[in-house]
Length: 143
Image (cartoon, rainbow, N blue to C red):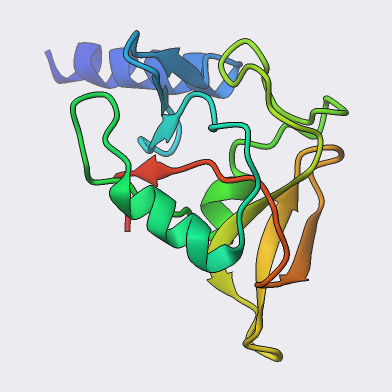
């Protein structure tokens, strides 16, 4: 019996590794099957300062939950797709994503008035002044 369970787990991990990364939950949220994080399917289409981005995610109620937050840079980078360009994300699961910067919650250590963002034009990570306006995609779970 144990061999069968291990085999099923191996096959499930292989399926996830081979491209079944996301599941549409049917409630405006997407589950990342690799990280188990739950993502806001579509942002609200407006740019915000970093402080406003933090507040937006903390106030968000979506998919029956109000436990949303701004993702850290590693989490945000995990949904970028380096095989795609402009936008560098799977648009089946994340429609209407702008090919622009998206805020992370991670402050740039050397200059604390800056935070890291992920550019969904090319999936590159950069640092930006927190008073700049960028897009926001909220997450829950993890951390």
